[in-house]
Length: 331
Ligand code: 13P
Ligand code: SF4
Image (cartoon, rainbow, N blue to C red; front, side):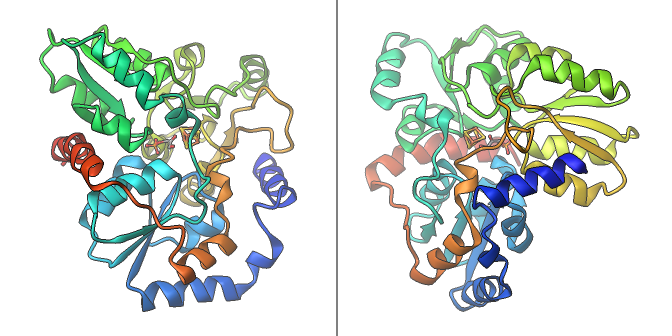
C-alpha cells in the first residue's frame, strides 16, 4: 500500500493527476458529453485511476478490441494508446474513434517499422506472419493473424505444427511463446521499454524482504524474469490470477496502472509493484505513453471530438483480415 501511495504521489508530481482534473466538473462533463453523443469510453488497465473509474469498460487489449467490435455506440473514446484506437477504427470504419492524446504511442509498435518488416517478410516467403496487436495498421496489413497476450497460444496452436511462422514485434513474448508451444518461430527484435525496465537485483532483494510473496509477470517481460515468475499472463490474466489465488502477497511485474484494479478487487491482499532499474519515486515501471491521457484531455477530446483517428480505407481493408481472424478464434 505504501508503494502504491508513493506511485500516486509520483503521478501527481509529474502532472498526470492534475489537481484541477480532480474537480468534479470534469467528471460530470465527461459523463454528460458521453451520454449526449452516445459515446462509449473504453479504457486499458494501465490508464490513471480516475479514467479507469469513469470508463464504461476497462479491459486488456483483447477485451477492448472485442468491445470495440460489438459496440452500438456512435463514437468510441479510447483511453489507451494509438494502436488500440487504430484497431477500434479499423473495426468501425464509419464511427468516430477519438484518443485523448495523439502522441500516446507505444515503444513496441515503434520497434517495428513497416518498410523494414516488409523486407524481412519477403526474405521468408514460406512463413506465415503472426503479429502481436501492439503494432501499426501497416504491420497488421502485412500479417496473417493478429494476437494479444491472452490468446497468442490459442492462435499459434491453430496453425499446423510444420508451418513456419514469423512472430512480431515482441521478442520477449515471442521467445516465451516458442517455449510454451514448442515452436521455433522467427522473432522480430522488438520490445516494450516498460517491461524491460525491471531490475532483477532489486527484485531479488524485494523477494528476500517478502519471501512469502508470489512473483507474477506479463509475458512482455524479459526471459530471466519470466523464468522465476510463478504465473505469466496478460493484464486480465494477472488480475484473475490474484483474485482466484489463495495466496495473499504478490509482486507484480507489469505496468503499475494495473494496481488500481488489483487493489479494488483484492483490498485485503498485499500487492507490490516490481521495481524498475532506474530510481524513480514510484519504485515501479510506468508507461509514459499510457499516462499521457489525463481527465482534462479526455474531457477536451470528447467535447471537440478530436484527435480523431483516421485509417486509409485500402490499408484498413487489409489490416482487418488478421484482426477478424483473431476475433473469430477468440470467441
Ligand atoms: P494486455 O492488456 O493485452 O496484457 O497488454 C498489455 C500492454 O502492454 C498493452 O499495451
Ligand atoms: Fe507499449 Fe509497453 Fe506502453 Fe504497452 S506498456 S503501450 S507495450 S510501451
